[in-house]
Length: 253
Image (cartoon, rainbow, N blue to C red; front, side, top):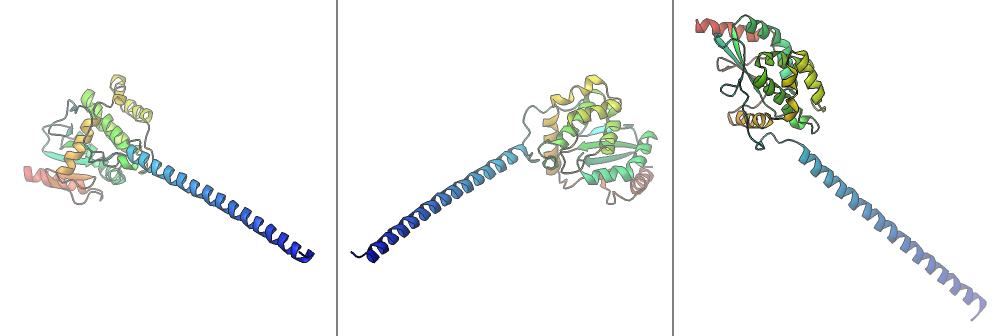
């Protein structure tokens, strides 16, 4: 074999060897990337499953024994004079921005009407926005606190209700912590012995059951406000609730 042929053969072997090395390296890279993609997908699926397990389905059956707060009557937490001529029923969620707006526009009038003995309020707290508090179940925790006060110190329910809206967290946030809810309750005058019961979560099953009952009864949004059983269409215009109450009082008279 000539030197020229021998050189060409050596070059061909070198090129084949180099090609084989590149192909092997490419296969390793592809295998590695494929493995990383699989790991990412598995991680994403696991995260999604975890998030789903942490979220609260408002239609899920409540777990644990359903205990009704002592002062609750006909499914409502009563506020004000039971003999008042007009009843105002309010379905609310403590994370709901629209409920916060209702409180901001109608709260002073409603507070005055309660004080004057014109209205009896039926609070009906539900927890359909647990999904909007990053897994902390803020709506349920806040409603449980109000239910606990309704059970142990009902005269302070309205003050706590107002305070929860005065310090309402933004929808989509983690909400107030248990300690922050407890501090609002103490500031509202709730006895420490009652506040200390908040973390026992004894009324959370009631909150969840009542939420489902509200949906079953046709409640589709919060706030849903009724004056003597009639839906208040205009819940955000200042003075609208007072006018509706005055009209109902006139009809009752």
